[in-house]
Image (cartoon, rainbow, N blue to C red; front, top):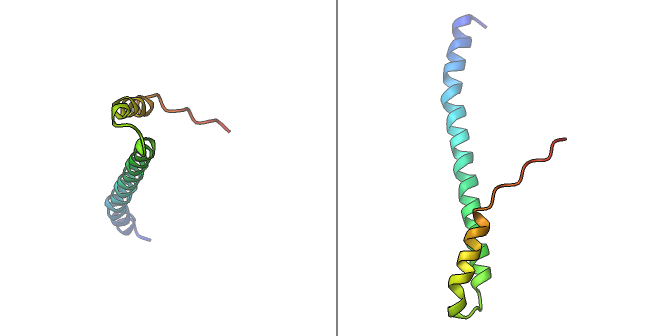
Length: 73
């Protein structure tokens, strides 16, 4: 390959890589939010309306806890 071809390939690959990375970030965020909604819906299902505020607060506090560290290995 010529130097020009290598440069043009690198220049063309950068936006594609950025777009793919953005898509995967979007999908991951969407799945996480769907899971949060499902957990909250399950927690609230069949509860007394007077208890729902406390349940929502508890779920929210669980969502704000620090994320676990990855295990090395």
